[in-house]
Length: 124
Image (cartoon, rainbow, N blue to C red):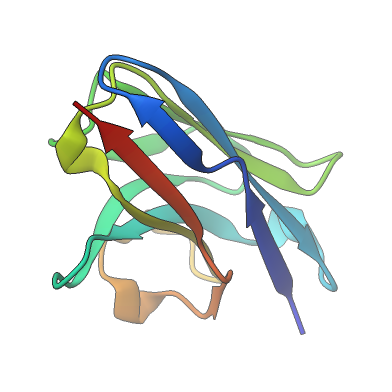
């Protein structure tokens, strides 16, 4: 069973930055496409970014393109999300997820394993 543990969330002022990490264990990390999703209070889970198994391809939601960067270190079994120029509307619980397929899917139903989430709060 693949296990995912997110960290790095917190409270930050608008315009600030955070770096989220997601550490994986239990299976071969490099076999999985990795993604980040987020869920704000009262809203559904929203795709943020995905990265291919090798790290050579990435895909972003329009709402974060140019501000967030996804990366991975297969030697450390970890995927990262750098959040820059944060806005109050970025406030949410951020989740990492994995899928076995090669496509950088945006639908949450296409992902098999999920972490417990880390809270990001952006104040004005």
